[in-house]
Amino acid sequence: MKSTTRIVAVVSLTAMAVAVAGCGGSDETTPVAATRSTTSAPSTTSAPSTSPSAADSPSTDTAASSFTKQGTKLKFGQKAIVQYKYGHTAGVIGVTALGIKKGTAADLALLKLGDRVKGMVPYYISFKVTNESGAKLDFSAISSTHGLLGDGSEAQGVIMTGKFPPCDDSGAKQGFTSKGSSYTTCKLVLAGAGSTVSGADYSANDSDVNTAANTDYSDDPITWK
Image (tube, rainbow, N blue to C red; front, side, top):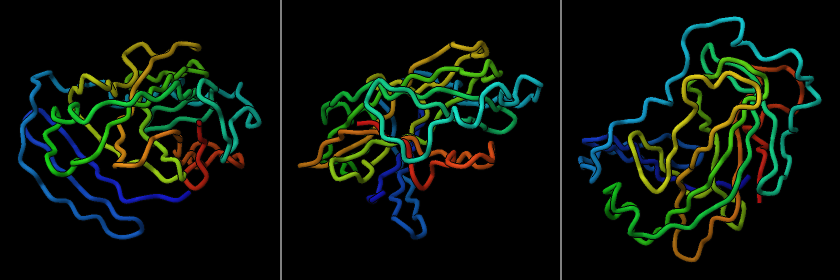
């Protein structure tokens, strides 16, 4: 997939760091002192579970043939079934890209990124995540999602800690353990002048979770348009 240089911003209550990540080269990180206009407490939902248990293992009831193949092209509203693992937390989840909402440049003032986002427009991609295996997935979160521009390249992404009201990127709460339970989350991406975010992808590397073929999405993501 064609990719572009991405601006990645890490936002906290009192300061933020901005890194411009190049394609195929080393990353340079430039700290930028700044404050946010909100005083909301940082979200704690992204912390993974650290206590292994029998429920943390992926369900053996899910056959390898049930997982969505790498490179699958879906429409918004269609669900991909994938393995999930982070630390001791593992299971099977469903990921559905629900849609994309265009924001306004004024929304970005909350992040205090200044000229880093001059001329850019935010887009908010909503995802639904379902527990497909009944595994213990408290506080889990998906991170390997991106926005796609019209030419298939990745839109510039913003990684946040803390609250950004236009786009709640919270993960699962405690109790995300029953099969069929779900939560929704949001991905903030940016597009420059003349570009539009029209798609989304899921590109997690799941090869360490399941040895079945076609379940590593890092080189050939699942996409929605």
